[in-house]
Image (cartoon, rainbow, N blue to C red; front, side, top):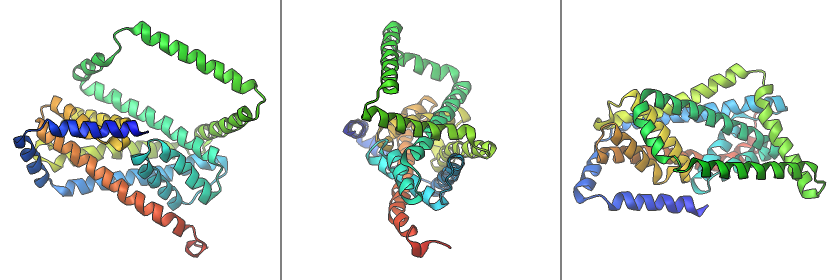
Length: 316
C-alpha cells in the first residue's frame, strides 16, 4: 500500500523540480487570481453527489431487509473517502464495517452492496470515457494506441493463464469441505446477495436517477471549477469530459490522486491548448479543493457518527 504514496510523492517532486523560477512565479500568480466563488460552487456540487450516493445506498439495502438511517450512510461514506486517502480500498471495508456496527447489517451483505456500487461506477465511467472519445476521437485514440502492448499475443496468453487459474480456484472453493473454504463460500454468498440487490430492488428508476445525478454532479464539479481561472474558463465540452476522465482515473492510481491528478490534468489540458503552467495550477487547485472537502467532512464524520448513535441523540 506504500507504493501508490511513493508514486504520488515522486510525481510531485518530478513535476515541481522541472519548473523554472519563472514557471513557479506564473503558477503562484494563477493561485492568487483564482475566483474562489467557482471553487465553492464546485465543492457544493460535489457534496450533493456524495449525499445522493448516501441516499441511493438505501435502494440497495432495502431488498435485503435493512433501512439504515440517512446520516449513518453519509457518515460512513465520508469516513470511507477519508480512509482511502491514506489506505487505498480500505475505505470500502471501513464503510461496510461502520454500517454493520451502527445499523446491525451483516458485513458481507453491506460489502456486497458496495461492490455492486463499484461495478455500476465502473460502467458509468466507461460510458463517460465513450463520450470523451465521441467528442475528441482522433486526439484520444492516438494516446490510447500508444499505451497498448506491443505484442498482443503475450497479453492474450497472460489473460488465458489467469482465467484458467481463476476457474481452478473456483472449482476448489466450490467443492472443498475445509472450514476455510466453507467460510469463503459463506462470505461470497453474502457478496452475491448484495450484488443481486440491484436486480431485486423495487425502485430501480430512483436508483438510476440518483446514479445519473451523481455522475452529472461529478462532471459539473470539473466544469464549474474551470471558470476559476481565466486560462481554463473557455474549455470545450470535449476538454471538460476528457479532463474529468483523466482526473477520475488518476484518483484510482494513487491515494486520492496524490501527484497523479495535477500532472494528469495538466497533460490533458495542454493537449487542448492550455499552457502548461496554468494547466498544472488548475490541476492542483482541483485536487486541493476536493482533498480539503474529504478531510473536512471525513474528519467530522469520524467525530459525529458515535455521538449521533448514542441513545441521547436518537429521535424517538
